[in-house]
Image (cartoon, rainbow, N blue to C red; front, side):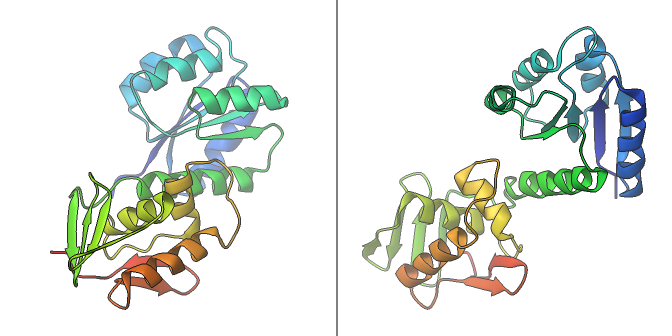
Length: 228
């Protein structure tokens, strides 16, 4: 299996090498770049699976690199920066960063954030690209956002419907509460612990005993219903 490729764009060489060491220990393939002017060329050549991007770079600064990358790619990007103001964080996230870490930071936390972002990204890549689903006596139409049990329409809230679609598009795949939360709510910080649990409970109540949703204790939820 090919190792995931991570590009670290950071001009502090000692820090960049430390990041490389910790990520390499987790079996990632890591490339380093210290000059912002070469970033887009390097990204085009490497086609990385994730980018760790400093904001203060010689040549083109990190925010401009982020803007340009987001015009052509949705590759996951974590900003790593000494800038501590809320405005910098908000601007980076609004432009398209997926996460933001302020220097100095723990290498173990950095690795954990990389792993968490890969999990969220994979959760957003559906196994099943269907738009209409049938299981048991239930039909779900993603385009019209209509859920039917036999000839009766069921009312699901917008978040309940999105959660159900996420599970249907990843059949027999365990999705953690964090993955589901990020997929449906689309925010950068994990919300209330019980938010996903409560919504799943509501979905089950509305769909009935043939809802197809399995709780995997300590791991998350999985859709086990037989999709036609």
